[in-house]
Image 1: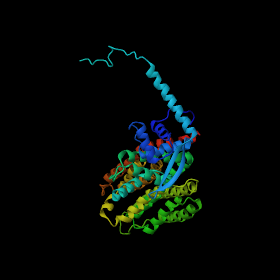
Image 2: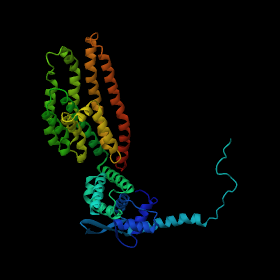
Image 3: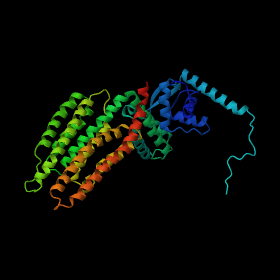
Image 4: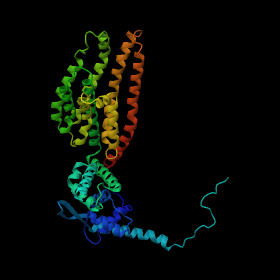
Length: 119
Length: 314
């Protein structure tokens, strides 16, 4: 990665879901859904693609492995780098939001959005 | 309850095959655990969203692995598949309808075609050389037409040039197998099913009228094309390999299909008027074979470039 670009929404919510402590796969899906008010519903494949990338970037780290019902369950935690990247992204979005929130909108009234159809 | 769970799990595991095998080794159990936990009770199929996400995730994992291999290694693997398919398809079609190569011979050449999967150049060389000798002997030996057939002499004269072209192409394919095998990256095991389609088809022709009917013409190629086009969703390399095989097959097929009817047309034109129709039919078949290449080849090259670009730039 040459320059930090805007984080994709699933990635952002995966990191945000780990703010309160390490979670396992389904834990992340549930927490991301709660945090986003039900809007971000991570599909299983999407979650693991995001986790692979975040682990490779050093933003997330494997914390524990345990056997539950005969299957391996891994928990992931946020690293220092991950927390920094998440904060930077939150900052970026807050600044972007402020541009809109602080502006008094001067909308153009009377101008039609589209040329009226003739005949 | 536990019954539907196992059904769901089985289907989820089938979907996980979109991921490369080395990835599955480390992650499959964990992904299955998450998928089962997230699925509402009583579901026996993974949801459409989950299914699609696994296919897309598999493609990501494969692209990451391909980038790790490098463009050269990927090209080598894709190219290896071509001669392997060409060898098994061509020798299998000799076996079908012709009295000579026996099942054992088709099997030997198929094994030679599959030798690169062993991952060792020495092993490939050891298997390929006797197969080459057998091919050369079989092709150069007199064509065993029955003596009572009046056109035997004409046909064998016409066949001479075709036979040499065919032998040259087959030996080039065998040489390519040796030259390209034994690199650092192993051929994916699932690819070995593609060259096996032809000998398997030949083996079953005698046992099923449906398969015998299907085996005629270019149907086997269309079947393979359909498989690799579906495969494009996760991996472009098999489609590229198939196109190489087609490019090898087309000139060979054209020679055979033209020399036969042409020879008969010029010598027996007055008697055998039906030959003109036969010539037209073979021309159509050759055109059809060519038409098949660009729609598969172009997206395959584009995807292959995209999958390996990152390494070329790095």
